[in-house]
Image (cartoon, rainbow, N blue to C red; front, side, top):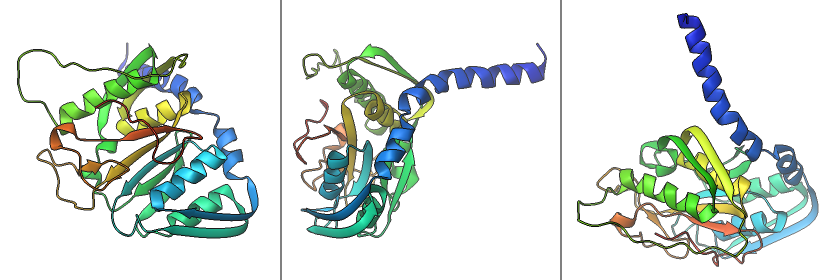
Length: 253
């Protein structure tokens, strides 16, 4: 095989790994339609920035990934009103209540991102290589992802024996397939949101930029500002649509 053909072959293989998942992501047209939905008179009140975003995601059934910084400003009561606006314009108005945030759409998911978190300290941008799990519960995919990420962010100390764990899932929860070449953590979380009933994922960064020993910004629970212990970093939480804000059950740590 010539060098040119070998390069084309490798490109084809990479596309073969990625394209089936992009089809699962997709309902992109459905998401575009949801974001373009006109709302004639809308008022949002919430106890903070993240809760406001969760309310919109639930109300309009928007797959969403939220990466926010827990601080006094983002936990201050929020009120936004708009007339004759689209859902996307309402979301943008909420994002603009806080400096340093960006709204983008990728992988069939709406993302709200804290741009002040250094990419070098943001675990969601970690590249994992090939990530795959076939015919598994969403909670199984979450747990595998958590194990892979923690091996980098919070590598365990050497100790004898194995690690015990458990998974909680609803009866009849559909199984999903995830296979992504050159995946980031964000890509896998988006895949779960796109292919399962867990439609929203939230990363809560602490206000302090002081990193962990491995160089990553600490994370906390959505419900409080205290970082989880370093040996349990990083933390994220997932929610279904129609769950009351702050009532989701995070995957096991």
